[in-house]
Length: 304
Image 1 (spheres, rainbow, N blue to C red):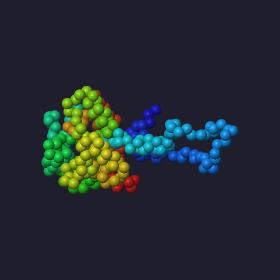
Image 2: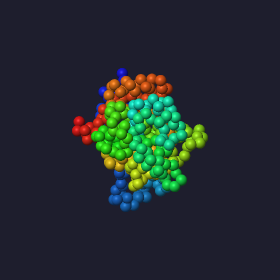
Image 3: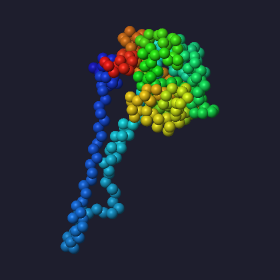
Image 4: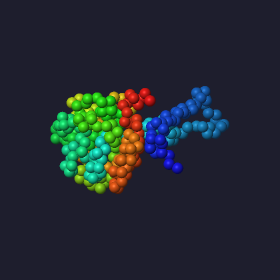
């Protein structure tokens, strides 16, 4: 039988039906210490050396703290971090046609999105903002993702907040007409590693960037190297409910292949059936799951 939960998610992916258990960390057991009384006692000339005698230069016994360190490394694994891209259902067919999510300034566009969620001033701001200083790509050269389904910009749309970054079409659209495309950092990294092994021309250190706020914001910090982006992502993940991770973005240069999408989150059964119909002709068919909490404001969801 399938282990699909009532929200349509499989394999324990639903945080409500399959809450994560608290991580178990092995207790550190101190090594027994020799008695001072015995250690200070001179050995008898009539007796052979005690089998408990420690030989200098012998390898040290393994320290229990290594187990704790291994557990910490697992807890800090950023590969399991989910990334979320919100779009309108009417844009889905165009995404399938191009085979990827395209950055605003990508040259691969043949037809612009049917429903443009971003306002014109916001697009201009992102086209002007640079990822890593003079000579680098603009923010608009990257496909944006949220690091939380409760991201501030998306939550503002759910609450009807008048955010100048969102278009009139976004503010007037029905909430259930939006879909959330989900993937993971691991899927992205694996794809990039495969591209590098194949000698792809577009492989670069700045293929992924992580921000601690709106990517076009004047005070936003953008980490655009593998080391700095990984470090910032770890700090953001340290507090999953912090304002930082709710405002943060993960940026993918130029394109994000649709094949890397692992889940499409929708608001209700009707939209799920419609999305499945759109995906019917696609070679890649990610799981389509009804998950209402993603389509309700964070405060309203917490009150349920």
